[in-house]
Amino acid sequence: MAGAWGVLAFALNYLPYIGSLTVTALLPLFAFVHLEPAFSGSALSISPPVDLFSIVLWTFLWGALGAFLGVPLSIAALTVYEHFPSTQWIADLLSGGRRIGASTPEPS
Image 1 (cartoon, rainbow, N blue to C red):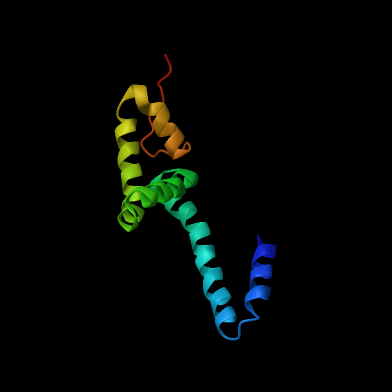
Image 2 (image 1 turned 30 degrees about the horizontal axis):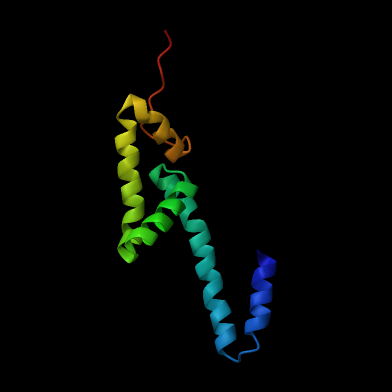
């Protein structure tokens, strides 16, 4: 990935001022987009790939509104799935094993 950014920086530096500014602005933005799902996923007990997928899916379906509502809708679905024994396996998949309220079966 660093090589791709190097090629992009090399190509855009042929445009005076605009190319350097573009690369300088895009690189921190890319780093934030790359790390943000990991931070929010661990804070919300949801798997980071599911977090990113929900943002992309709901943005595709509803546009900018979906980008803001994607993660809360996924958290709501995760909460509903946790409450029913037949759908707890879906909650386990969505959370990536990070569920806070996950109940452990008692030994018999």
